[in-house]
Length: 384
Image 1 (tube, helix red, strand yellow):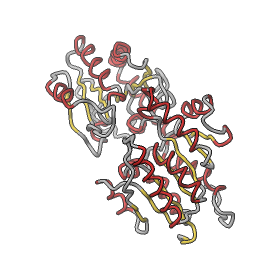
Image 2 (cartoon, rainbow, N blue to C red):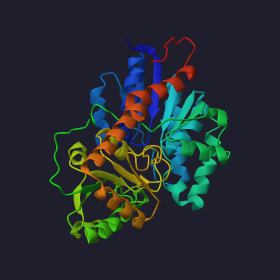
Image 3 (spheres, one colour):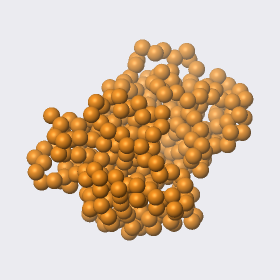
Image 4 (cartoon, rainbow, N blue to C red):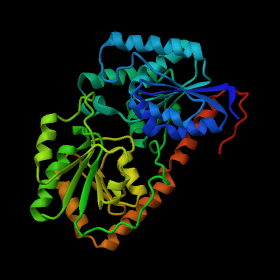
């Protein structure tokens, strides 16, 4: 039974983020008897609210996730401060960069307990320069205001700690946002037609390694003309790493690449693929990879944060050097040379790893266990 005196507020930069990555946490807090409110800009994924009868969604007006205008960000701080003052939640869970930074500041002024979840370091950290320096400074300031900072991989926690960007006692790591292992379930009824299919699934960002995927495809096709390369995803136009539309037009015309568009349900395409490939420059924990592993598919990724925690080289897939299409092509050729039985064994080991480490129910429990002692003392709920 939900207790209206117990109230959790979750803040993120899009409703898309809530729909795709946070429903497991919402479900668990509701099961624990909490009223849950979500604050995020409204987009087409607001339909997630249909699943939760009593959940309240508040549309944020001043959260522009890619703006560097300080006046816009000041308006966001004021908007969040007023929201926290009005709702007085027991705890605010912040996700994504601007909620983590500006939400932490607003929570401090509103005297509301706050927790930040670092869901990936994003463009400023990958590319450095002035935006990266400013983001680091803002994180260093706002991290003082959060009771705890949770990172979705251990590399990001180590980076923040080594650069003195947080009190080490506040920092914890978990393995991503989790994957629904019942929804992404292996389907062994599919039988390949003999052609090996490598599939890239993700937002069409250069930072996801999409250029390296295309270049590696050309190298592999030169030796194995029958191999197929599928590209699935959409352009994230607000992201500074978004691909140029002219590049996408070129890839659509490329006879070596099959662009399949954006797919809300990627399971049929994972099922029909032999291997999922993500040559990303840096991740939190790559969801497309863990979804593929959950469906018992081998994976190829780069030896970087957020991928090396999921992929064990030559066990459930391959790890390759970042920004190296030749190394990526070599891994693809190694995969092609494997027997059907060896590929299936890689998939089985990936599934076992997901069940043990990346189950979204397990991840939600970890969030709960890191949150519960920040809640008012009258809450007698115990861990599950």
